[in-house]
Amino acid sequence: MGYAKNENLKGLAIYDFSRLHSIEKIVTAPNIEYFSLGNRVWSKMDIESLKPLIHSNITHFRWWGNRILDNDFSYLAQSKIKELDVIIERFSVEELASRIGFNISVTIKVPITFEPSYISKILPIHKELL
Image (cartoon, rainbow, N blue to C red; front, side, top):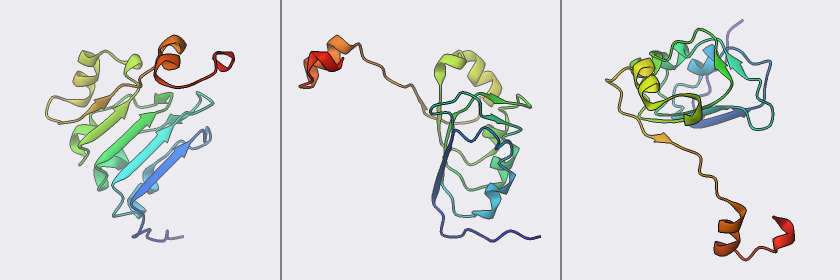
């Protein structure tokens, strides 16, 4: 059974699909540039491998999942990814650099969290909501 080409798809975000373990069909979207997947509510998303990314045109990849089962992040260096979003708490910068390889140029974004007292100073929020 063949898969339809998703030629008009430019971006895709998949969250909290704990039964999704393979991203190999991402190549059916030859023009996709943004791909985001991981956990929003449940921390159960495990992906078999990032290898399918090397056969895609993805330039911005966001991984907020639980685990990459083959534990091989070097596929990111072999891909066309220029911007990478990961949960930095899971890796030291050195570990992430060694897993990816030093030949990749990426931007690592860190989720910013504010203390409720700071938020109340910059936003007009009622204290009972904090």
